[in-house]
Image (cartoon, rainbow over all chains, first blue to last red; front, side):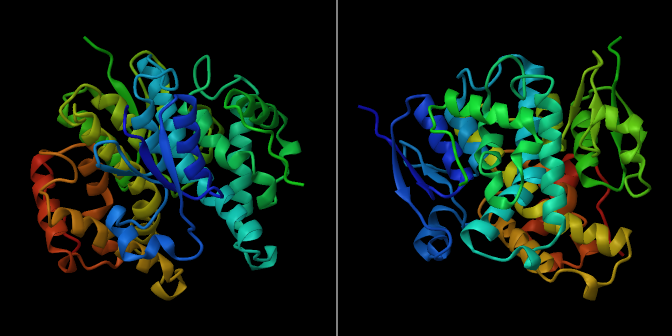
Length: 202
Length: 202
């Protein structure tokens, strides 16, 4: 029997759920250790030994080696699977979306979800650019998904998994998904692909 | 003769230089189209047709297809080269550094360089967290480079190329590299590897 990988993650975190979804979809056995990021658990010395960056998700692989960064972990788990395109250009476009997600989507959409929904901060205390930049990211997704059913190539890839994580909960961050109908349809399609119950904000 | 790739980039931008350095190191013929990001060139309709995200670098490949995101472009150009480790775990660690660079290093170190040096903003007008988070990123690099001569495995990889881009100019962002001696030595080593003149802030 293969030793399961151990995923340290928070069930509230889209970055952590990405890794869980890929492991589930590919039938990779894993143990999930719930790790609360808001209570300082990821700043404790024993956690910093696992990941000096003090972030979840972090994974202990079957051989004991450690890996951090949600998108890097997904890529490692999904190598040679159908979630990574075999065509070199499609693979490059998947990487383009993965880096764009971490730079131009997550810092706005996920940060607003965390502040408004989990930390109960008030809209008027937030930097207004979080809203405009998050809306720009959703508009960029809408533009692509109006043309193609998935972000890259002919089926779901890690790009769809990564972007799904926070996009499906965007309403918790004060974004109205009804303004992005192709995104909304893609969210439902990807939830079905991954076997997730449709997320409802209310 | 192979048609050269076309790189739209700004010579002031580390993200753009990353792509140039990889093309030069691997002997990939390219045409460089200088694109000024501060004058609004990347917001013009003809540019947005190339990259709807309105960012440089963006590359037109030999077959006319388009690719954006510095790290995705590097990965595409460097596939099957010595800059990408053949060992699966080392490759995963390289990805970990590449995503960490875009999420936890560039938004602080590069943003301070842009604001203080290129946009001539004043220190007192900047969000103080840019300084503390940038310093934390440099300390994380120092921690790794005290232990190993390169970020991953036994030689230079795309992780070193990506992190070099803004780290070597960190002093323009008000960071004192003398506080990070292993980083400073690695900068000189990587500049030599890539055939670059040592960068001097003064």
